Image 1 (tube, one colour):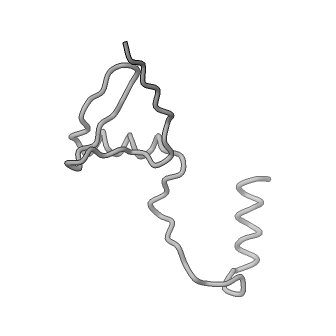
Image 2 (cartoon, rainbow, N blue to C red):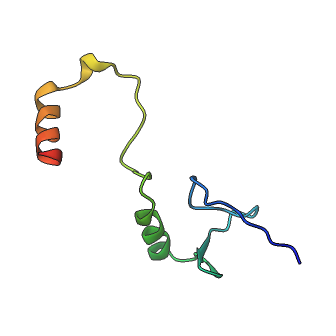
Length: 76
C-alpha cells in the first residue's frame, strides 16, 4: 500500500497539463466547465483580485486623502 499526501497549494485554481480546471471536494473531483462554476471558484480564492494590477508608481502618486478615507471606511 502506498499513501501519498500532497499539501494544499497556494496557486489555485489548479490546471492539468491540458489546461482543464478541476475542483476537488473531499475525495471527489469534478471538472469545472461552466462560467458560473469558474466564477464561484475564483470568489473562494482569497488572494485573487481581478481588479488589481501591478504598477511602478511611487508613493508620490498616492492620493493621501483618498487613502485616508479608504483606511477609515475599511478598518475604522
